[in-house]
Amino acid sequence: WIVAFLRHFDSITYPRITRHKKHNLLAIHLLAISTVISVVEDWEGFADFGYLKLDRLKQYRPFKVGILEGEILKDKIVG
Image (cartoon, rainbow, N blue to C red; front, side, top):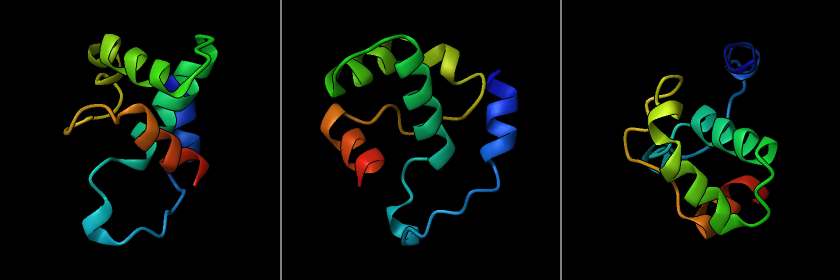
């Protein structure tokens, strides 16, 4: 399912300023969807899940700068 998810969402453009593109948009979405499927209930849990599953997540996206912290992740997803 992960490959199909990434292929489907790969065409999404995100109007961020280039200098703000530290984290890959698809990596953020992959982390969010994987975490929700795993029934994590809060934003800090999202970050904890990301750290625990980072090696697995890196099989699909680079996560070059690691995992976003919970509140930052919330800001990226919620806006």
